[in-house]
Amino acid sequence: MAKKKKRKHGIKPDLPIIIDYGGDLVSVYDPVSVMPYSEPPITERTRYKKLNAEQKAAFKSMFVSAVTSYWNENRLIPFGEDMADIRKWMLEAFAEEYGILMKEDSELKNYLMTLVISTLNKLLKAEKKIQEKENP
Image (tube, rainbow, N blue to C red; front, side, top):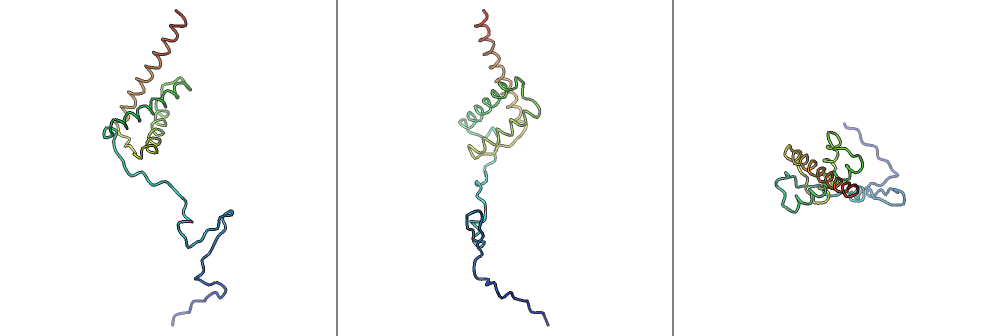
């Protein structure tokens, strides 16, 4: 014969258990109140060349401003880990803004390196013009 399970006599299983979390009463039987809120996941994943013109322009302007701020702070060309950090930050920021997570392929990396070079060339030309005006 199988053994009988012992039952605790003081607890009634049909009553919900309510836990006090710093002033907020949360029912254990209400899974919505127990689960933390998080943003819905980004579902669309695409390559850079598949973006429309408006999204490409927005990404380009975001990246140019990031490279400009990096240049103003460090006076260095972003390369290696610094470039990877900027690229990762830009992809996350773009995903938050537009809900599109871009694939980090070699085409995107090459495009971003050429964009860094052209951005820094424009910044250096602007600085050179300012210096020429100050010291004729």
